[in-house]
Image (cartoon, rainbow, N blue to C red; front, top):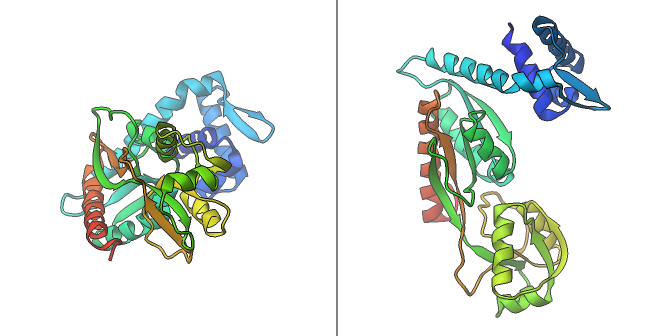
Length: 299
């Protein structure tokens, strides 16, 4: 059985579209569809069903999906085992939140690849909850994300990169003497309550009896910062890492009462066959974290 057929099947199911799977694999949709058909012919069962432009699994496809993921995972491990002990190489599958992808991961990977040019990278952006599940399930080797609001499983390790307190985000032209009063009176841009940072902000508002005049609710700290810069409102958000110049005129004001912080870090699976690659990544992430703590941003 050709593992490429399995990979095409898994991507089609996970992405819900032959066209999306084709883009991920750098193939034509016809080529991906042909691979899936050949896999179905080899296994003697229909694996996917089409409904309009979306694709899902049949009962047979659902039964083999996890086994297919395991086989692909084992193949990646096998390739990693062939790399000599004197060098670091092979594929590192890394996930990151959009903020990390924009602000930290490019610099970290540039340093990592300068030291270990034989490493191949697979990068996957996503929400922290989705990336967390993929690390726990072995689909990703590691991810830079927000620590979930529960204990990690025993098969995973964690390194805290940064702790981010809640701050009031306003246009730079606004003078603030009482953050609570500003939150109570100004138009409010709410950070999505489906993510940890938004949940922390909502809990703070509730704890202090603040009922803001909400203008909108959205995920994406960069998007919120642009709206605040344009004078469309204020927001209560974690003091997130921004290492790139944005050209925005913003001010961050500390909150007057202590509250749990959003914790950013690196999570990885302890049993990964690419542990040496993860350790090399961790070394670079740690260096950048120390640089940010001492200077405010990486060198």
